[in-house]
Every structure is written in C-alpha cells, then in structure tokens.
Image 1 (cartoon, one colour):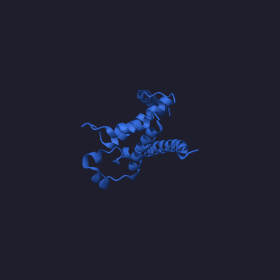
Image 2 (image 1 turned 90 degrees about the vertical axis):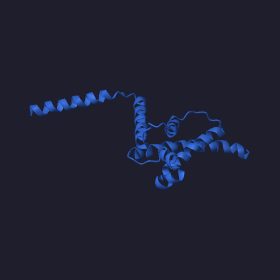
Image 3 (image 1 turned 180 degrees about the horizontal axis):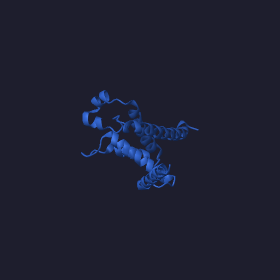
Image 4 (image 1 turned 135 degrees about the vertical axis):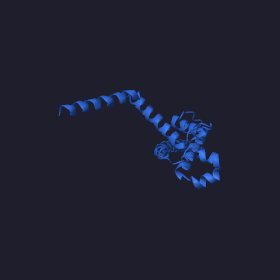
Amino acid sequence: MSGSDERGPQQQQRLKQAKIEFDALLRKLLPECARGRSGLFGQHARALGKEAAARYYAWPDSDKLLALSEEIAARQEELGDTSELPLLSAYLGYRAERAADVPGEPRLALRFLQELKREEFVARGLPTNIERYVETEDVAREDDRETDEHE
C-alpha cells in the first residue's frame, strides 16, 4: 500500500475528529460569548483591524474554532466530501453578517443558542411554541394561589 493510499483513511479520521472538536468547542464558547465576551464572530477584527482586535480582544479558543472551521473545509475539499455540516454553516453565516443593523456578538451568540435549543426540541419531538410554556407556568401559579387561599 502506498503512502497516498494510507493517507485517505487518516484524513477521513482527522476530518471526523475535527468535526467533533469543532462541535464541542462551539457549544462551549457560545454561552461565554452570550454572557458578553466578544471575538467569536470576528466583528472587532473587521471594525478595528486584526492587530488591534488581537491585542484587545484576544480569545485563543475562538481563534482555534476558526482554524478548525478552515481545516474542516480544506479536508472536505481534499477528500471530495460534500456532506453538509449545519453547525459549521450556521457559524460561518454568523461570521459573515455585515449589515449595519447586525446585533453585537453577545446577542448573535444568544440567537445562535436559541436556534440550537429549538432544533434540539424539534429533534426530540417537543413543542417549540413558547406560549405553551407560558400558559403552563400561569396555570401552575393559579394552582399555587388556590392552594394558598384554602390553607
């Protein structure tokens, strides 16, 4: 077996590993960004320039996430892998937003987290209609009030 024949399975394995790392790292960084840390979507780098953003908004894990996304894209191209990665596509989509009315990175991260939670609910067959939960909460409060009144 030649070296290039062995590289295919190794590249496939590395691609799989990179996808797993990307998923885990993104899910770790999104809540941190939603709590106010900037740098995940590259807004400061575009506004201030890469050097200033690196100096004042350094976030090595965010840099690693971007590097993983680039590695995944490159490996997919090398291997002719055309499979869609929704999480990666969504992340790159958020990074590409440039309109004047684009919210700050914490709000983008919160929106991204909400989308992921909605997808998780759909996958589990749970309702995503928020009014249903509000109604349930109101009914529970009314039940508590009735219990308090009878005591």
